[in-house]
Length: 87
Image 1 (cartoon, rainbow, N blue to C red):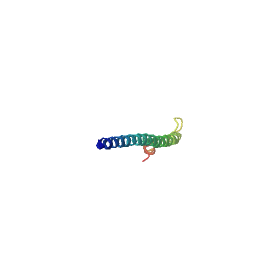
Image 2 (image 1 turned 90 degrees about the horizontal axis):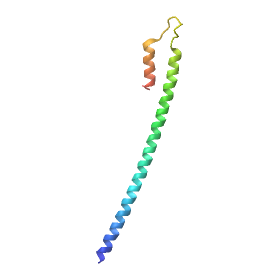
Image 3 (image 1 turned 90 degrees about the vertical axis):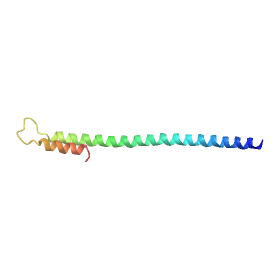
């Protein structure tokens, strides 16, 4: 008879502990996912701004068809790709 109360208390304690662990795990997982998404979003925005700035500078430096000579050619293109890749 007295073991019945012990088993019941142990089962209740285990159930509460399991419920607490699952709740904390879900909260942590949600917060971690949200925080990681924010970090990647900021990084992608930074890269997009860098690419846009580099592309505008690269396109401004390109020779116009009516200008004689003065082309930067393949080297300028490689520098542009290097800037975009943030190397």
